[in-house]
Length: 218
Image (cartoon, rainbow, N blue to C red):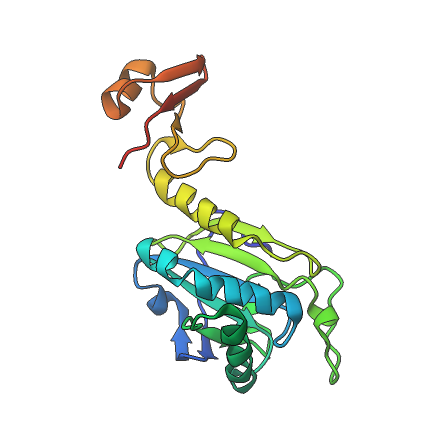
């Protein structure tokens, strides 16, 4: 069954490079990003983990934890981390989950439609689309999902932008327009009439009766 927006993020207990993770406890009431990979020691994944490591200060500024999932062992993850840090020029201090049994991959519907798991000799192609992203809110519910094929490396600037948009609109009658960046105007939801919108968010820039912009709250 697929994981949908507003679903409770599946809980799990797993070993990781940071020890045993009880996922819902680990969330600790903040935002989190869980992102997955086909296997350790693969080229695209190494660049992606490096990008996450380089953004450590950005995740912290947004009160957001990041956690990686890969279908290899903690021992392999530890060796791979050295490659990641060499490429990134930054420490990779976020945990990487040991998902050799595919418990997390299956719980989060990360596997491709035609996946197969040979008894031995598994290659990245067997779990080719285990390259997904979930943004999870403080209430442990899924706010956003993204899935990428094996050949397409993720744009972590876009993931960071999406996180900013999620946080800017979480629990308030606002939305972000296409290509929105922090500091730009936001869209007021149609649940508010013009007077209610002005009272709550100040002056409106009304482009169309159903498209009204306001300054983003700080």
